[in-house]
Length: 261
Image (cartoon, rainbow, N blue to C red):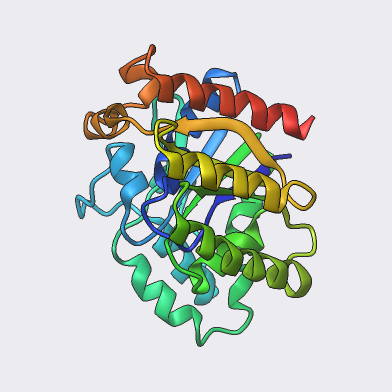
């Protein structure tokens, strides 16, 4: 039975997609069977995996969502599940933004993604959902479909302010929609330990949430190697095995699985 995680926070540029992408590969290297889901209309995770909207008749996550809303049968899995480097994933396109708008008028819309992913619970060990930088209907769907949420956050003041708003949303989703939802922890990304701001905010996060939430011990360092690896469609661990970021994502995967055990 798969455990479903979403990488979520409404702040953009904190490393949600990068975390989802690299975590998927790190978990696969640990022998886990992983399904990644691009649930952002910007399609950044799909791009990381090398999937482009070729218009060749393939199906995307928005097509599955539309089928659910129209009470239609889903396509065959081979028509929408792609595989790269041992990781299965469901891509998205800009068309997901249309779904976002339609969900606001749909009865029982919060559980559409959950209903789709329930079909894969017995086929994978880990399902990872990459989310958009907002607190709209798509993010609510992702939280409703998840067992646990990973909160990537870079050590900057505005991100920490956004973290408080996001936690209120998680609390509401847990109370009203998904009582089984838990926070796996806060993952600090883009850490530049040479700066005082990074050290100060990191200490503040640990102090503020030490009795409430798990703050992962692993820190993802800030490095240009991450951007380079994505450009070449590779995980940072494969692009540069000696990169501190690659080592960190590998350690994070181990910490996440240890946290579960």
